[in-house]
Image 1 (tube, rainbow over the protein chains, first blue to last red):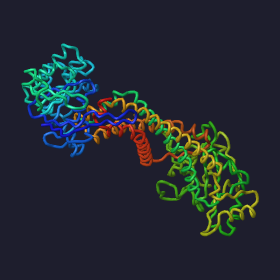
Image 2: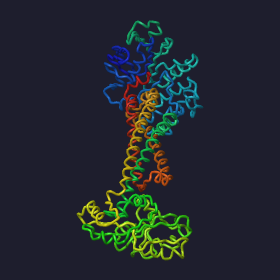
Image 3: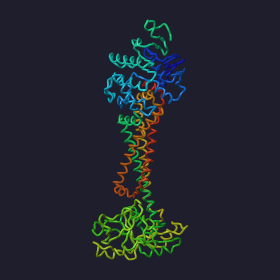
Image 4: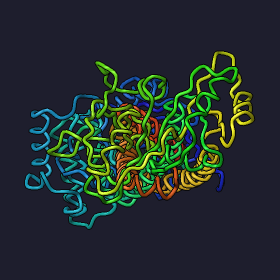
Length: 240
Length: 397
């Protein structure tokens, strides 16, 4: 479970004016939810995701994952929690170009373990099959299309069997057909793997896929709606 | 995928950064070791020659100091003479404990009766000698006999022979001396009696006669009694013995010492400039390479790499490149120095002592640590900047 309590995040810059990206946000994401976060550019949705993942330190407030305050533990414990409890899908191509597809997928296993065992490699191949790229085990990222690379990223995010998958605009750089395929893949993973998912997107059409919809505006949550309300079209009515 | 493989992949995937770092470190390491071996080798060699002489004062024919110094350092053959009677005159002077005469000879050039052409040879008096016997590597069972010789460290029997031919006379090599890096390493030592025997037989056995002026010597090496002042005794010798120069040991090779000091200053300055330029270059290139990988490093943070781990990985990458560069630079530089040793020593007119393998390895390790520290210094700011930043900020850029 992810819990944000009165969280604010200000980016201080020497060259430019400081920006308050997230303002006094409180939020609970419970096990099994599929939260879709939308909002205009600069509304603070990516910062919100980074705060949930412990990638950005809140200027004020508390961020907890599975009841562990991310900023009361040291960098090593935070990194371990990220490694083992969270999966992350970025909006940009995030595969290491020097590694093969298989090596990219098992990369997270090397940070808090002895590296990939044969069982891990088998699981990585199984995940590759899940994302439809069984034949790309030994390919390097530059041999893959953008959509294929994103599928590999999803497989990498799942290698440690995380309980939470965070995706930051995973389809923003893809064509329409590939976008549909990636969304289908994420939905399939959500339904089959009992995983908590937080998806940040600027695409309003994604709202229909989530069990909960959050709309960000000016660094604040302007709307937080459960799926029943989405389906009924009453998105502005109730707060979670 | 372990860190080592990731590091090696990153090295091969950043060829510009990798080559520049390796070449710059090779340049610095190569230059430092070249300068060190040259300057310290020359200094060590001068010290060893003085130690080898073992004399507090060297008495030579007046005006021949430069010739004698060049003979001792470079092995340049010389023929200088003074009457043997100076030995007795010097022995009478207060403060003198022992006087040992030596005669300098040389083999013929390009003659079949001499195994080695233009070789510097020293005939000494075993009864008074205190400069040759102490430096023999292997203990001799008995004093040198007529026909026996001791070689400098590089004097060897030629293939297929068990003697060295001097003016058609067979010298049996029975020992060799510790290395000095000087001309003494390529010189041959035998007794006065042997020299006289060679000269006596040379009209018959050699292509040309070896002419020895009777009762002549080339130098008289003086050891002083405890407490005697070398400079005062040297002055006393010059005032009482005609037509000789008495040179205290600390005044020997003064020109060469000045030359070495100049060389040290010039090479140190040059090395310092190259070092600073290389550190700046490595700093810029590595900073650009690290900053160019910000997003990748951010992704690694997201996947679970700690700040310390990333810092270690980046430093390890540089360590691998630095070790490769230093090993290459040291190997290349040392090879050049060894291959062109004769050319270098003769063009600089300085001897060169090459350290033993353990000494050399210690020096190479020292240079590696210095260069590594320099590279770390150059990388410290960019690496800490990237690894200490919030992962979200790194990813955003």
